[in-house]
Image (tube, rainbow, N blue to C red; front, side):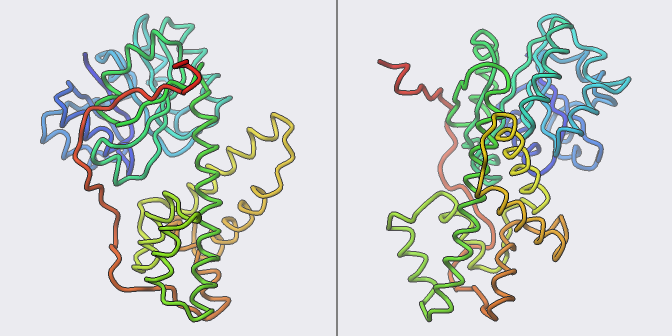
Length: 320
């Protein structure tokens, strides 16, 4: 099985690294050839265009920063669709719009290919170790065909239903993570202003009903001061904007998400779109004169769990 991987950024590069580490025959491509050098040195091959990578590979994975970037890679004259053929799989691992992935998936299907959206969740540190979670939207036979690849790149793999369902759930979970991040920013700044020790505050949240994955990861780099989770404000804005689009298409009158959008829009205007997303706390630090820092926390998150083959997560309703 030959795998093609397009997009070697913060997440994509780590997912491609898991494939190479687990012995897959890998061909890579990125607009920045320098990002490909570690893979080429490790035995991967290079493709000069998305069409070339498609013509030589059985499964073509895209992991790109926006729906527009995915559309460009798919639909340009030397794009994936130009070389798509019966039986080939296109796996979209980007966080994207479910309507767009269905549109592109229909074009893949028309050429005889098999589309799947399979975004990941859990942070760059877990992508690096192959312990990230993966959602997969496609028919069951395509899921079975993709499963060996997904098991090598992630630990928990959930078949979410038809094409596009994984993208809906990915932006749902990213919305929840964003809401949690902003509430933690308010909690930490308020605790500091109230005179609380921030190491004690961290532990109080961690052992209580207020705990969460976001607290155990992003709160640590906030308190360290690095604020580095390899994710930027423009990407948060993209993700919660996609969630807003899903809700609007479904006629759901959201109340909280528009506030989150406004807060991150303000953060981008103040600090720039490529500012690290946890630095959204600076808005409150500057407003209150507080500095939210504490000793003993890491500058970056690391996954210390041993890598192990992924497994399919089956919803409880399907087991009964």
